[in-house]
Length: 202
Length: 65
Image (cartoon, helix red, strand yellow):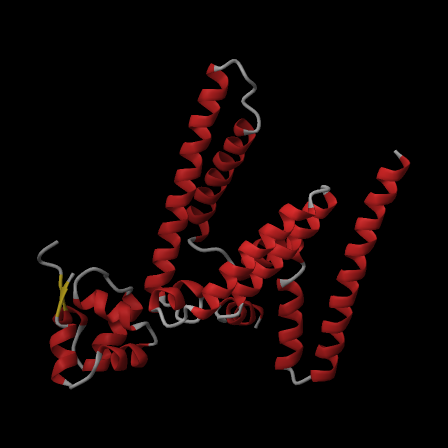
């Protein structure tokens, strides 16, 4: 149930555009907290434009395949290989950056601990796949919904609302959506207010 | 991998898109299999063989590997 549900959401053509938009809003909020809202507006504009392009480029089979609604086993494989290759590119860049920083007599941070995280994650993943061959749905839910959801509180929220809608509890779904939305906006304001107060008193 | 997917599909007068829809994959995936750029998963190979009423061994030729 949960597996099919989360799969249904990530396979919607709205998932990636909505995710880009939410990520842009989070970046705007964070930039605002950091005192440079202009940078956040630019991030939001770039991510919103990316989301819009992805949403409107559905004529392309490749976009549909990578976006989710046209995804099949071949696109899943392409996605996995592309993810592995980009991970490799990041690791090579980190190693080079660490070597250059160390040779210049500078601190290897943050490249050292980023490399340590990469190495540890790789070892854990090898041990995991050697034993279980696949990621169990509940772990995938924890990692994907839990981590990204913890970051954005979006996927958990949408998964809950869609579950309620699938159960035919429309009013409850509407109530949950309203409560989540207003709650998160209020909490964001409260968070910004807290930082403003802290800055004013320090 | 060399295969008979294109010959069997044309024999049934089907377009790539129609076969793709029947298999629940994209048209590009069918095209990639026919052009030997993608080796399908075992479930998809079995589904293709079942669809055309042949065996997987008849459909795919691994002698070139």
